[in-house]
Image (cartoon, rainbow, N blue to C red; front, side, top):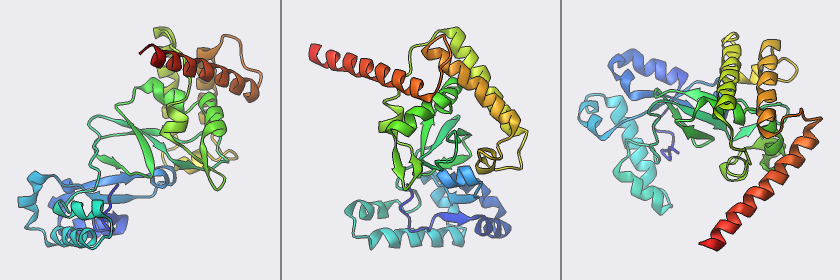
Length: 269
């Protein structure tokens, strides 16, 4: 979360103009990704500064002006927590960084989509609070979360924003009763997950919104997801599921078992 009054943020046009006059400041600019930025391909940027940068940036009036605007926003806020942030006006309220990679999980996604578009981002990116993130997520986890089985769970237990999916770590991620799997299944999940990502890369000019439009989804991508779905289903039972109702019934059964084990564990303690 920035909590900066917009002072540390750039539109794509503002970023280009800024770097035209201050090309050496490119190292202080990071690409921002929230739900809509990731899904719709909206290009937004931010100043991302560390304390060690403060001496050098004094020579860049544009940056110093933005920091001053952020400080003013925080000083005049009625929220006491925001007021305390005035003492580091060069930084977002939250300063989580991606060290290697992170899996971005949009909080809000259209109910028309069969899957919530997710993906991996590198250290050059910052994930906004309008999305969720799993830092250092393994490839197989991407496959689980972007599967039909997980989407059945999200539709049943997740929240809604109007009619759109509203993904919650507490309701959707933490409660998903994914079983223990062996190394062979894990490798198959990883391979199928990479195939989904590779299929997306065949259509680099298209946004996630376009790729996951149910009426326009490329056949190559759909087939990759279907192969992944079959492997995730296999993690739960050997025979194929007849429909989503059968998937959901099994998920709730597994969830009750999982909740029962946790409850028994607490009693023993």
